Structures are given as structure tokens and as C-alpha cells.
Image 1 (tube, rainbow, N blue to C red):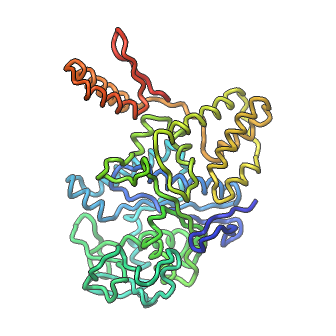
Image 2 (image 1 turned 90 degrees about the vertical axis):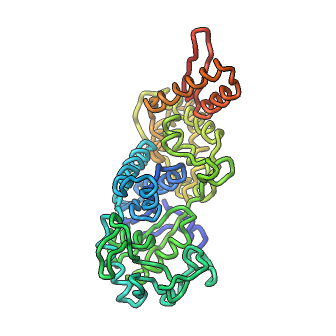
Image 3 (image 1 turned 180 degrees about the vertical axis):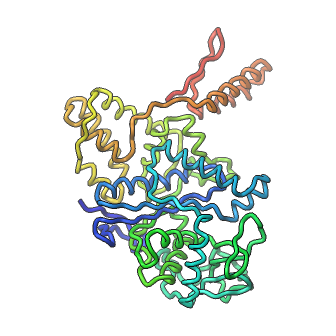
Length: 443
């Protein structure tokens, strides 16, 4: 069966052909580990996970790389703001991310490289780019020379005048051209820097991914598939192509996929709006497998609008599937090429979910469909999951109920109603009775 991927590089759906027969390499940009993972991080990881699961069904060997960015301006700023050392922040957030992705039933990638473990590889990659005359040294910076790479813009389709790294208006003094971008820069932070041929410093963001890819698959090897959020197309992935092409003779990557952003009630998530949805909050309040299903409800290339309905619809679908599976104690599985074909059409999860719902319904009258239903659920990671309320959630709910009771006793009914609404948004069902308040998670 043939896999078709919408290739951002060509802006069309193409049949996927690996560079080496029966061997696939895929890299998906992971998070910058400076704060708790949000639902957008989870969606990007899920798309990579689904492609990984599908590729494993189709090919003998699949190398899946998902990195962790633990060197970044955001991490330094978080450390300065909180007083927590950089390494503690990155270690804690990394553990949090890995734990939460595991709860969402993401498979572990083949490799999960960290920037801090690849500094020597990064320096080596920069030296190759310098040797190929595609970069220059200026004021202790190593800067990529855009004039050396004529194909820049092939991924983002931006014209030359738009190609300004970070959209800066004022060119930095160390750049020959405002379009040039940094490969290595000086660092004044003693906790975030390394010795290099160009002085004490740290890598630029873009070179990190290029170097980690090359260190795993080989400098002269072509990456089959590269993915990430569509906000990374420019400048990050565009710069990766420039670097990867300039440090080797092989083509950098053949296929690129990009997922859409997650909106909350049709608004972009932002701290200023206070609408950032953390993974920890939703998986504490709802079965993580329901959240996984909700993340699949829109095609990965489209924006996903996250609302209460998004989760409730996923709950209903999950319950229909689980009810059918629970009707039979057998554990037999059977391949289902019709379902596989839906996924091979550029990972069409909305159609795949509709297929599962119909299959679950039809299986009530035809038990022979259950082995295929089990197989299909396994394929997209919809495992049967016994959901338990965490101690953290229990304490939080009971604290809010206590606050609500205090507000009611003080006749502050507006605050009491506000707290009840807050609990409702956490899927908490309250019942006021003669003996006090009882509660349960609706899920």
C-alpha cells in the first residue's frame, strides 16, 4: 500500500518513496523545554507519532527522531525571572513533557537528542559550512551567508525582500546582509555557553536541528521526512535547508509536513489572553486517550479549534468504541486495509475516526468486525485506558469546593457561581445535598 504525503516543499500531495528501500528516516521538531507543555506541543507530537505508527506498518526499518531544545533565549529568560538554574528548568520540563506524552500514548522516538548533548556535533557542522564558504566570522559570531545559497525560499515560497531572519528591521553590525542568520554567537551567561574555535558562546537555534539530524543519519545522507508546526516553515525550516545543503553534497530532505495551530474558542493561545491550555490540566481532568482522540478530530494540516465540544465529542466517540470492544473478551486482531488506506491518504484522521464509529456500530450485529476494530484502535494509539483521578486534581477540586462553600456562607453568590463554572470547565459534576456537597468527574 502506498503512502501519500502533502509535501510542503512542492505544495502538493505526493506518493512517498523512501531514499533507501524499506528504510525510512523522519525528524519532527520537539519542544523548547522552558515551561509546561501546552496542547499545541501535544498536537505536534501526535502528528509525528501517527506518521511513525503508520510508517512502521509499511516499512521494515523506521528511524524517528524528535529533539528537545534545551538551549534557547526563552530558557535563559525563564531562569533569570524565576531564579531557578537553567539545567534544573530543562530537566524538570523535559521529564514533564516525556511523562505527559507517554500518558497520551505517544510511542518513544528512536532518538530524542538534546542540544546540550550535541555541542561538539554542532561545532563540527558549522565548520563544514565555513569550509564550504557558506558562512563567515564577524565580531565573534559565525553567520550564514545568504548570498551563497541561491535556492533560499523554496519551502516558504517567500520572495527575496521577505527573507529577514526574525523580521528584524535594523541589521546587526556583524552581518554583511540583514538576511544572514547566526550559526554561533557569544554568550555572557556562564551557565549557558561552551568553548569553541570562535570563542565562548552558544549555537543559533536553526543549526541545532540540522546538526542533530546529520549526527544521527550521517552527514551525506538525505532525510526522508521532516515535520513540525507550520509556524516553523519560516525561518526555521527554511534555514535548516540552507544549512543542511551547505554542509553536505546530498539533498537535505525530500518530504516536509506541517501541522496547523491549535486555537482556543477560535483565538490563538497566548499568555496575555490567559487561554493557554496546559497538557497537565486536561489529562488530569479527562481520560488522556479521549484527549488523544480529540487531537485527531481535525486533519493535521488544518487549525484545530479547541472547545468543550471538542472534548465532549471525543468522549462520545471513545465510549461508543469502548462499549463495542467490551462486548467481547477476545483479544484477536486482524489487519484492515480499508482503514490503513484512509491513513495513507495524508493521515486523514477525521475520515478514519468516522470509519471507526461505523465499524463499532456495525460490530454489535457482526462480531467478526471486532478483530479489525481492535487492530485499527491499536494502529492510531486508542488503547483501552482505565482512568483514575489524580491526587493533585482531587485536592484542587476539594479546595475549590471549600472556597465555594465559604462564598455561599458569606452570601457572595457571584463568587460561588464563578467557582462552580470553573469546576464545570474541569468536567466536575457538583451535587448539593442535605449532607453536603458531593462531586464526580463526568468522564
